[in-house]
Image (cartoon, rainbow, N blue to C red; front, side, top):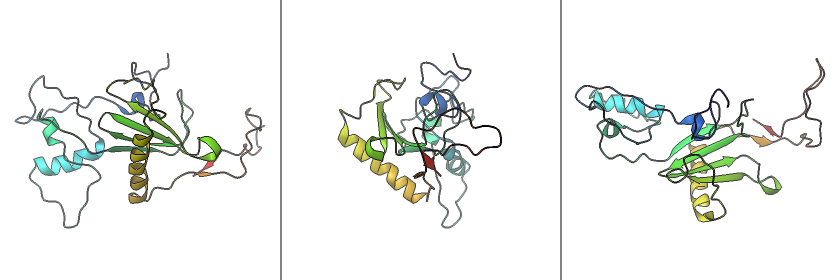
Length: 196
């Protein structure tokens, strides 16, 4: 298998599959966490700062905004539902399970992957998974959940606008019939499908 295998999760490092983004989070905070405690709550690194601000009793600066939310309740083993989590990966590194430039949103048990301009006639492509039932991301549910795809894609669109993300654009010089072998040394590389 690949050196970055996280089975039963799909994919590995440098991908937006669960095997590339889902890792354990271990927290030891005396008086808050319980020895041997466990939660399946999903948190992200952006949550640490607002969590520490809350737990340390600090006051945010006037007008200060946070990218994440406080997850102190999850550390204490209390019920916690995270707002939608976004992962933006606008490039295609040369790793196993590579994907084209993509953005994902995870909302509760559901995860939508938008693959920039990989659908029919140059539209975006989508994959939808229910992570509760399919942690290995093997059953794409876009065809049976079109309304959910639209609703979650609207969340992605708002996220990209709010963060002023630079998004890939189709490359008009892309030639899908060009040979995929590497160019001779010193020559220009073939055009890529997307430009960032």
